[in-house]
Image 1 (cartoon, rainbow, N blue to C red):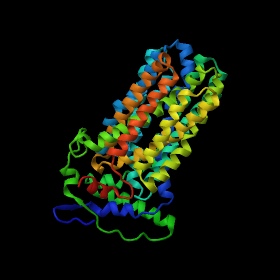
Image 2 (cartoon, rainbow, N blue to C red):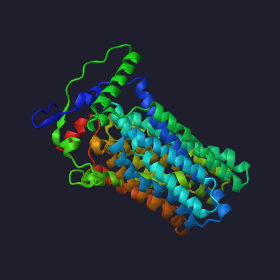
Image 3 (tube, helix red, strand yellow):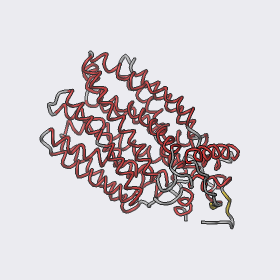
Image 4 (cartoon, one colour):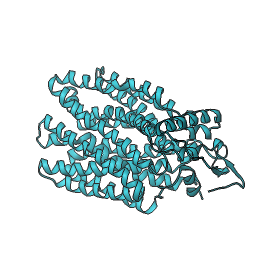
Length: 466
């Protein structure tokens, strides 16, 4: 689309130059760098759920205290998300990603030294604050580096890295926790989970800043230099010259100097409908995710399974999300983000209903795998859709806003309430609640969300704001 009247050309024609790039080792390098950042973060999150039985024994925790501890790191994520998204839009995706990895890794390691429940609670909150700086960035990075034909497919690959971390956490726990005294085991486990702090250097060294972001910030020479480096690398990989880029114009009202770029921008009249629909969809997915990822060892323990069997079953369940995310990313790229989300979350909600009435451990694992495959597996379509809903100058601010609301109600409120519901009303009622929240999210998604696949980010800026 060419818009010349009352419009401004994107400096250096960066968007079209990015869109014409083929999928090469460079593309995979960006996806892996962003995905491993999520992997090390998920390992830190997963360590708490696995260590809960030991912590409950050592610190004599009540159901309310367990809910508070689980919710503390999620609350830290919620508090950190929007500032991190805003700072990323202002100072760059790469810089905030590096500092986020360092902060949450340090606090995870320090958690191992906690002398009491109160200290552990504070440190888990602080580790969550650093995680909040990391969560909205990888899919924004992939969205800005990968062309419109492959964004969600690669986001599925990247998001699967999260599930690999959740999958490995109970396996690490199976190796560490049963072979040490409870008071020592959970501390060693936290140290191991925080060790990926070294990965911050890898990101700093090898991840380039987004040329799209640099151009929209007016840092034209840096954008041109970065873009030129990328193009030369890809020509070396393919052995062919890249095709010429055509001029790309975007409406002046979408340029950064003419738009609201404050923290409250996602709630402006222009974006409020899409922000609300994304938030409700995120709440449904995060609520199911946090319950499945955090409380499964405890639920299986209440059913009389041994600690080792609980961890093994939890690993199987979390592992089911890996192929789910890959399939979700593939389908979202071919049939659309919206219908893929509705399909996956609808099946996950049915799985929650059946889990609530399952009587055997085999049936519970099967239905929990359905919730993991389809519920946690719904994230690639969801996350990429809300990264695509906002223009580049407020992309991570908008995505962080949605993730904040989703994690607060789905993670903080849901994680705190779930052990109380399970204790007072039973497993069946707890999972009926999960199913109800899931079906509400599906209905809202079907009725209110906008489809965003098959368009460049710049085309979406024009289409969604027409």
